[in-house]
Image 1 (tube, rainbow, N blue to C red):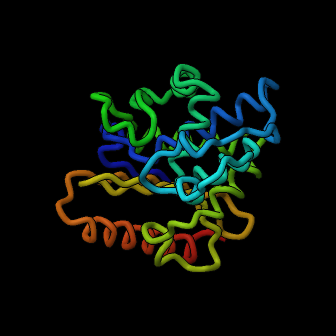
Image 2 (image 1 turned 45 degrees about the vertical axis):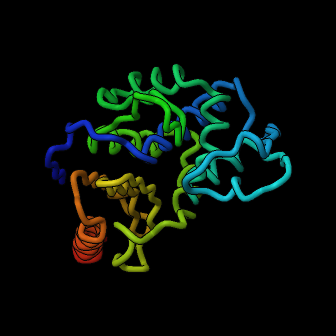
Image 3 (image 1 turned 30 degrees about the vertical axis):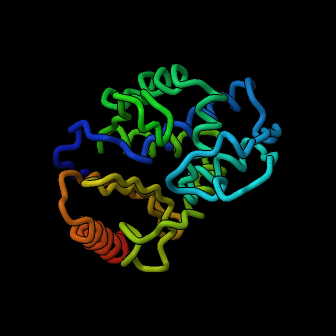
Length: 226
């Protein structure tokens, strides 16, 4: 069963663009052009604002690429994201998006680049395509494990049955509240959801809508999927 509404509408991606960054990292790992265990030095002077924990560090640290991906997804770390974008290249990320048919998705700037007149974009349909790509990847287990370790679970997963395994990624900007998830019951076929909400004056209203949609998905899966 498939349900869509305004799925091809292009909206600012906020942190959902980090799904594309993660996928390109793992694609390059699959191609052998980088190693997920390679050490990357993160200097205190290159930290950026917004979400994340790296910005709280006062000394230079070394992380593996896999650790930076984990921080980028689980706590939406912007400093880790920018380090990965610099490492793998914006052009490579955009080429990957085109290769898998994400026509509305483009990354044009680093995270928290407040001086740029450009933005990052995606659509609900493209977000679903990226989540499906995760399930096709030889690194599926690694990426699902990272998504299921998500710390921001106040939107789609908030009211879901705890029996469901939920791997998700949120995104938010003023007026925007996004969430996208791969939801699994037991060993059954995953359900994929992408809810991108824009033009909301009250973020609490948007978050509640996410929770209601997540609860409906949960009830459907518990009652209809074996």
